[in-house]
Image 1 (cartoon, rainbow, N blue to C red):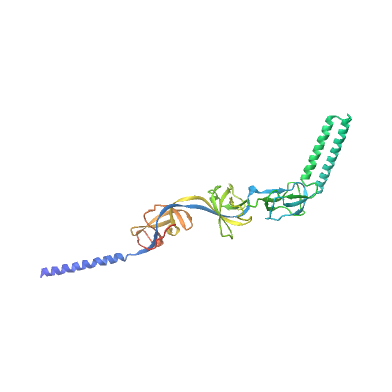
Image 2 (cartoon, rainbow, N blue to C red; image 1 turned 180 degrees about the vertical axis):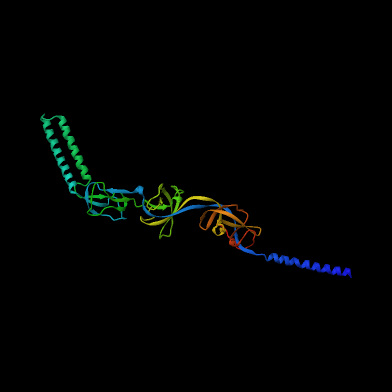
Length: 351
């Protein structure tokens, strides 16, 4: 009887032990897990860019100011702001003021008197009543009087004077109006070759220090769909006190835009090296520091990172990432260190 009882007891114990095995397996399978999508980690670089808005204007190095050659009154203006004129086209007509007209009349009289003096001295010399030196002096006075008169003629003192365009140009500024009295050297208008245009933008000082002449840029005019390739011509070395920005000039393709257009420039200043990851993979912890999640086996591991740059939905980061371990893209915000992971059939890739 004792032996039979012991056999029955052993059978009961073995039954319990055998039943506990599937129960334990079921319990393990019921542990929480998170469904995620992953991608591969790879090293690479992203361009570091600076964006700035500005206005298209004539290249300062190609601009030419038209000045008043003498004191005069503006009689007529033939051009309008923004107009493109051919070489030799009339720009402005000037009418000499009374003083300029009087100076011209005096210069003409002086030349007439000098001519008469030369003729008279030659007659006296032929009669041995004048010396050769006297004739030389008379001829010099004649030459000086002629030069003075010619200078006044070139200044437009002889009458109404039409100033013409020295080259095919766009009128970028008009500084006067009809009837205005101007003095010699007064700026009347400004010309520039129609194709010599730049985009002048303002950049905050912290970003401006990274910009150098020759840096590539993409320019897109507001209201236009097609961007254009350009490059930096000049980065200013001082801050404009009117807006607190550093001026940057960007050269534009010929005839690509019009003066006065507003555009945005995206300037590439450098390439940032590191691990390139989708922006969606970046998580922010409770402490405010970024991290990503990688998969080791079927468990999550949180890896702190430092975001170096971002461009077009991708980030370049620094950190102790494993190139062999998949990177969690979606579902990372639900994970903690050591949590079980179920991989989705769909995997994302970084282009």
